[in-house]
Each structure stands twice: as structure tokens, then as C-alpha cells.
Length: 386
Image 1: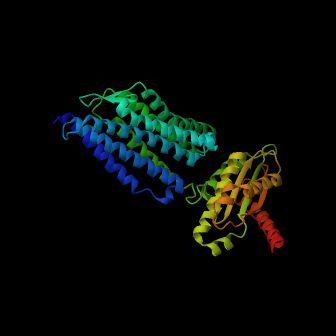
Image 2: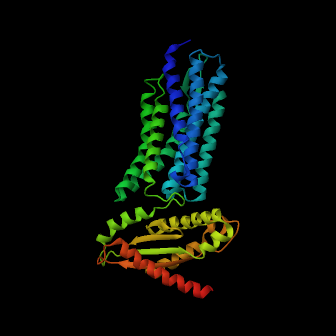
Image 3: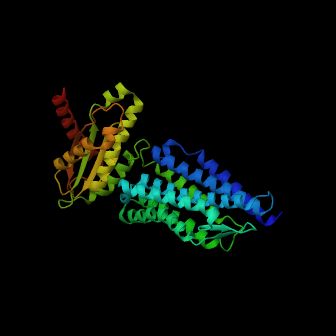
């Protein structure tokens, strides 16, 4: 029995305990359903990695007798779980930041294919030694194709890192910059572990680094909830007020700011007829269109309250009416609106707006003006559709 492996075993067990505490504190309020699911998937991958590492260390310490094939299997599982952890991180950041490069289906499918092929190569490596090999003494060593496996891991890490840094450099909102920089810091863990683990082979450096990253990520997202709407994943009213307080004083005749107030038509009917769950689903579908609109027009979007939303645009090339018509067109053509509801009701909206050119700096009065215009537009819609 080799006692030099005991610190590694104890460390792995404590890592499992700590991440379990985080797992049971993951709530729906921490983000959208997809975001919370990807976070949980990351933690599941971490569990599998820890358990497979413990098995390997226990076998190497001669605490249990294990054949080379089982030791190699544990190494394959550890590699695959690390790969899946990177992939779920990639998906989480896409849900959080909407990375443009993977909006196309073929690109998303390509990343899934990379995941499948790389996982298969780890399994086959048990018998071929292409990605890794285990000698008769049970010692692990990298194979000739390990570099390719590492490249796929880093692809899933580099793309979110680069995009998060890009957003951090282009936002003027301090809390957003802090969030983006936290996401970009995820890359530090595997880089640091890759440098140190070869020198300290009996210390689970990667496990400790990933645990720290998960903890920091959890705390960051928890703190961010004061600015986010949990149901839709959009900015909330508080965030909108901060944004307008920063932007309105900078408005000029050359750089006008347009504030749109958007309200879902007949939302009460949808809520009362099909139930609150479908009402929530309706709000999520509408929010997805708002996000697409924001990406297309570089707009700031938020849920103002209930079924009322807000969009803010700087230096628009189109008139407010043309922008509003474009949003309504996106809403009517949205696949999620057409296909995601089992009730197939028509989802429409009324839009009011106001234009700021430097004379106004009070966010409350600006929103009130846009709200009054929205009320007029909504009344006209009801007259037309009654």
C-alpha cells in the first residue's frame, strides 16, 4: 500500500463534497432553464472525473487490485468527462452570451461531432494506445494523438474566452465587464493544471482548479441576478435604469437614443385560457425574439415587468417606425413562436417609442413618454381587432 497517494484521494473526496454543496444550491433563479441545466451537466461531468481519478489513484496505491484494462478504462472515463465538462461550459456561455459563431445549425452540429469522435478515440485508445496508454505497472502516459484530444478541449474553452474578452472590451457597464472577465478566466484552470500536473503528479491540480472556477462562477452568477430577469434571461428593470442613467446624458442630435416600450397583445387571454405555465412559456418565446432583435440591431433589451419589454438603440440608421415594423416581422416569422407552443396561438405585440437627443436626462420621464405612445398604439390595435 503506497501512502504517497493518500493526499490525492483525500483532496478528490473533499472536492466532491464541496461541489455537491454548490450543486444543491443551484436554483432556477440562477438563470434560464438551459443555463441551469448546463451548469448541472458541468458538475455531473466533474463528479465522473473525480470518481474515475479516485479509482485510478486507489489502484495505483495498491488499496484495491485492478487489472490494466480497468485502469485504462478509468483513464478513458476521466478524459471523456473532462471533455464533456469543457463542452457543457461552452454551451453554458453560448446560452449566457449568445455566441454568434454557433448560431448556425451546421456549426453547432460540428461541435457535437467533435465531441462524439473525440470520446470514441478515448474508448478505442484503451486497446490501441493512440490517445493514451497504460503500461504493465499501471502508469499513464500520453499517446501520439493526445495532442488532437487536447486541441478539442481547448476549442471548447478558447471560443467562449475570446468572445467574453471581446464583450468585456466593448461594454461600458462595470458589472457586465466583471461578468465577462470571470467567464474568460475559465481558461486559466486547464492551462495552469497542464503546466503543473507533470511536476506534481500525485496532486490533483486540475480537480482543484476546476473546483475554484465552479465556485467563482456560481458566486458571480448569484451576484448577477440583481440585474437579470430569471424567467426570460433578459436584463431586468433595475439594469435598464442603470443603463439609461449612463446613456441618456450622452445623447445628441447626431447620436440619438430611441427607447421602445413593447407589450404582448392579449397576454392576459393567453395566461387565463392556457394557464400560467403556458404564460411563462409565451414570455420566454417572446424574450428569444427580443434577444435576436438585440443581436441584429446592437440593442439593449430588458423585461420591464409582466408582459412589457423595453429596447434601447443608439444611432439607428432606420426610423423608429421601420425598426418597430422589423421587430414585428421577426416576431411573426420566428420559428420558436410558430413551433414551440402546442396551442399555436398568434403572438403579436404593440410598440411605442420616444426619441432622445440630449434635452432629456431623466430615465423615468423618458420611459413614461414611450409608455404613453405604447398605450396609444395598443388602444388602436384593440379597436382594429375587436
